[in-house]
Image 1 (tube, helix red, strand yellow):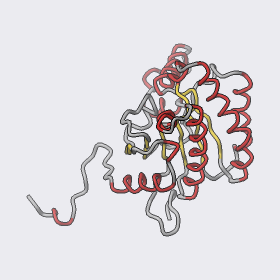
Image 2 (cartoon, rainbow, N blue to C red):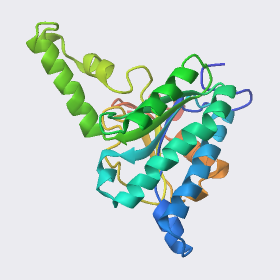
Image 3 (cartoon, rainbow, N blue to C red):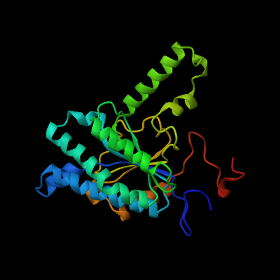
Image 4 (cartoon, helix red, strand yellow):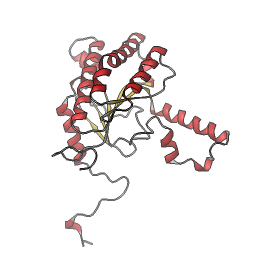
Amino acid sequence: MSAGQRPGDAQVPSHVAVIMDGNGRWAQLRGLPRQEGHRRGLEALRRTVKNAADLGIEFLTLYSFSTENWRRPATEVSFLMGLLKRFVEKDLAELDASNVRVRIIGGRQDLSPDLRRLVEHAEAVTRDNTGLTLVIAFNYGSRDEIVRTARQLAADAAAGRIAVESIDEATISARLDTSDMPDPELVIRTSGETRVSNFLLWQAAYAEFVFTPVLWPDFDRAALEEALAEYRRRERRFGGLSEPSDRNVGAA
């Protein structure tokens, strides 16, 4: 049985990434404040982590706060920062006991010192776990990530540590925030929007995308399983051609 499979299950992608969208609309539809949508979104996050582990997914990357989200009202940004703190403080022990490894990707220079310490603590505590790797994209933007990588490579080339000619796709991938994990095979976006919103632009070059109308607070195991079923219906060619089917063998 290959990696990413469970007994009796069809092949599942080893790395699933999710753009968690729709908290605000979920709250608006119910006449509730946006903060309540974010709280319910955190519950959906917890459910999805458990469901992903149960289904045999090895890497789950969740887009929780983008570099563009700083433009939101200060009260909402502060609330979202508090949610991350509460998630780490409340859930870390359970994640560790469940053998989940926590990774945080994104720029850390804009985070407050206490939040940065909390992020580093979560990674350190779970570093040796061998189950699901939960990747939280926080203060993350793919363009920012690529710019940071380009600056590092430019500095190394200017200092003579690397030759410009040696820079290739593998070199760049090795400097990205996701350097120690496989590229996502499936990217899911909730809420019906069909944008990638500056998320894993390099890594998702050959990912399958599933856009579901389900708002993130309502995203449950059934919605995840439907996205996985859609993924299995896709034919992944990576720019190549399909293998000919039996009925086409010998056809002109």
